[in-house]
Image: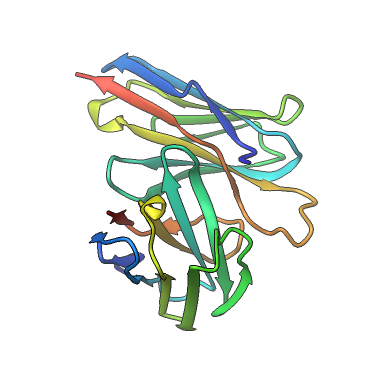
Length: 114
Length: 113
């Protein structure tokens, strides 16, 4: 089963509005990543936030991490039609032993309407 | 670098046929991953390699699936015999570390009829 769970599953907004997506996870992590997937394409890395970081910015993207709540949020400001995509979180579990692999969420589908 | 290259982009095959998917990772990446993506199950890790050696194949669904990495620049995922439930998008990704930033290919959309 996937550790990361994004919500909402789907989000529809108007161009220019902000979009917020959330990711919750179950176990302690070393870091958390966000990826974007445009329709029919592969996933593209957006941002990585480490467990000792609380907030990170990249252009119009802002990611926050609350390790006490085991959750992260991805905020896209001033959204554009080109931001229409699915967004996934992936966690790097701490104390995973030999199970050295990312754990993926099921994604949030974002539609930005012109 | 051209990124991770997968071929073919689309494959339609009949049930029972053998299917081979190909991947060329980014040069210098020590890790290569094969994922399967479906609407129902999301993104599933099938197998990953480190320096051409399979490390974790616990995600490979059945013996019908096999993967090889004969050298640092090439990997294959083979399904023999294929079944309709294997229809999915298969992604190859490569990385410098097993849980670091992964670079994905464009995927192979497999349809088994």
